[in-house]
Each structure stands twice: as structure tokens, then as C-alpha cells.
Amino acid sequence: MATSAAATGGFYRAVWRWHFYAGLLVLPFLIWLAITGALYLYKPELERLIYPQLVAVEPEAAPLPLGTLLERVRHETGGAVIEVDRPAGAAESWRMLVTTSEGTQQTAWVDPYRGTVLGLTRKGGALQTVRDLHSLILTGPVGNALIEAVGGWAILLVVTGVYLWWPRGGSPALRVRGTPGGRLFWRDLHAAVGVVAGTVVLFLAVTGMPWTGTWGNALRGTIASQGLGRPEPPQASAMPGHGGHAGHDVAEALPWSLQEASMPHGSHGDIGVDRAAALAARHGMTAPWVLSLPAAPGEPYLFSKTIRRAEDGRALYLDAGSGRVLQDARFAGFGAGAKVVEWGIATHKGEEYGEPNRLLMLFGCVAVVLLSLTGAAMWWKRRAPGTLAAPPRHPDRRAARALLLMMAAAGVLFPLTGLTMLVALGIEGFLRMARTEPLQL
Image (cartoon, rainbow, N blue to C red):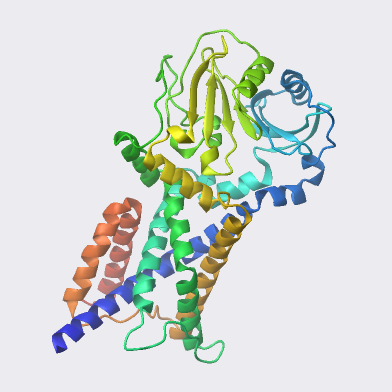
């Protein structure tokens, strides 16, 4: 009985140490993700607040023909329009992605009724910057890899946090003791927030992983290989030198399941953007949508339904030379795996179930900030000046090794998180050697 109790205590202590180090490692990044994610949840409202003169227009009977709008934007900006974003609201401006003669990209905010460019911003405007900051894509592959590692750690923090909180010996599940500002107060508050919001935080972490580079691409490949993903295009990479959507601006407008899909190709020639828009409308493509214009001979007109709910996901490819439908990929045609991921992404963005969904995701973001701040306060109250104040080891090394095996399995499931585990172990080992202490797992 004593041995069992010691093993239990040892395992608890080992979990506590991993939870402590993981939290200390990723705390700033979790706050970063929570704040930028919360801001992006309110993209439409913030855009109207930041760009009131660019977003709002006075509606008239009907917009000008799309071809006329494109020509006027080309004339006013001197650049080439590569993408058109038509919103659902009649009183909203249209956004057109323009490539300038210098090769940079800007968003032109266009009054569709008068054909005037209301203003130019960097690609996507301020909220695109928030989105890029959320994924750290601004820093390239390294930043995105860092966010992927943090996402895996966030999942482990929730799981280990629940284990540490789990009531033992008849203690109440929720309580906040001690005086405000004391360590006991911060510890109980940290646990209470985690228990109340843990499911939402875990959901945000898991559903954010498909956007990552290594893990997300592996998931997409696995789903596709099992026949649970996107519908295959009728002509995969039919034109030499033209692959899928990866690396193209069009990819951002597509459902997740189609972003790496091979692009169907058709005949040469051009029916014109007005006829393409009319054909898309005839095939039931209603606003809001994003139109990606052909970038090379043989590439199609691609109309992507702007997703509000996962079920809205649709990509309509029209042959630029003849107008025939090359592919009409809809959510109903996705495999079960792709449907689950698309649902998770739409819910993660607060769009699947309307305002209650958005408020729940906002609650999750606020909870992440509170968990990070209370965790930091709890650690600060516990530490002595000049010390890390890591939880002490338990003499039962078997429990620590058992947990290490579990963490190794998690590291295999989330490879970049596993890599940071090795880094953390290496740093701790180096510090112990520097203090001339023997390294213990």
C-alpha cells in the first residue's frame, strides 16, 4: 500500500513538473494567440471601425458589370487585379487584390455602384495583419513551426492540468481560497478557470492544428490517402508547370480540404469575366464569394464560396475558354475526415453557429489569457529571488519514467512539440551539469 501511494505521489509530482515547464515555455505565445485570435473573431466589426470610409457604400439598383469594375481599378491603380472578394451586404465595398508593377500586393476597396477606388491598403488590410500575426506567418516557416509546437503544448497543458486538478480525498471540485493576491488564491483561481474553460481551450488548440505546416499537411495527406478527403479534380495537373493551389493566393479563399488540391485545367481562350460571373450565378453561386482570375492560359475562373458555415464550402471551376464547369466541389462531396476538419475550422473561427459560437470562442480566448496570467502569478509568488522554483522531484523515478514514455508518445503525435520537449530536457540537463548535479529523469 505504501509503495502504491508513493508511486501515485511520484506520478503526480512528475506531471506537475512537466505542466510547470510547459507553461513557462509557451505562456507568452498562448497570450499572443489568444489576443490575436480574439481580435480576428470580430474582423467585420473591426474593419468597419478602422476603415469606415472604405467599407461603407451607398447602394443603388445594381452593381456595375464586373469587367467594367476591373478595368477602372486597373486604370486607377496601375496594377493587375488577380482576385475579387464580393461581400454579401449590398452596402459594403468590394475588395480586389491588385499586383502592382513593383510586384507588391495591395487591396483596393471599390464602390461597385460607381466604379471608384475608395482607397488602397496592404494586402487584406489591418485584419489580415492580425491573422498573419496569429500564425506568425510573417516570420516564415520558423514562426509557423513555433505556433505548431505551442499548439501541441496547449493540448498537453489542458490534459495535465485536468489531472492535477482532479478532486482527491473528498476535496471540492471548485474553490477559491486564500486572500486575493496570495499564492493559494492564484492557484485556486487558475484551477477554477481551467476547469470551467478547459473544454473550449482544448477545442481551440485541436482545431487550430490543421492550419499548421507539418502536422496540418500530414493530416491532409492522411485523410486524402484514406479516401476521406476532398473530391479529386477531373484533370490533375493537366498543364505542364501548373500544380495545385499551394503557394497561390487563391488557396486562402478555398476550404481547407481543397487548398492543396490539384487545379483542373481547361482550354485556352477567355470568355471574359462578365460571362464567367453570369455562368457562376446560373450555377447557383451567390454572394459572398471570392473570384480568382486565371493567372495563365488554361487556368480556370475559380469562384469560392466565402465560408460562414462548413456546409457552405464550395469551389466552382469554370473553363476560361468555353465556360463549361470543370469541377463543382461542394461540402456534400467531401469525405468524412474533411467534413470533420472543415466543421472544426468554421467553429474555431466562430462562424458555424452564429453569435453564440463567436462568444464561446471569445470566452476561450479570454480564459487562455487568464490561465496564463494566473499561472505566471502563482509561479512568481512561489519562487525565491534568483531561482526557477520548479516543482521538486519525487524519489520514485519509475513514475517519472512512465510519464516520460507518455510524453514521448505525445511527441510522436505532435513532432514539433516533441522536438521542443527534447530541447527542454537538454536545457535542464545542461543546467544540472553546470551545478555539478547528476542528471535524473
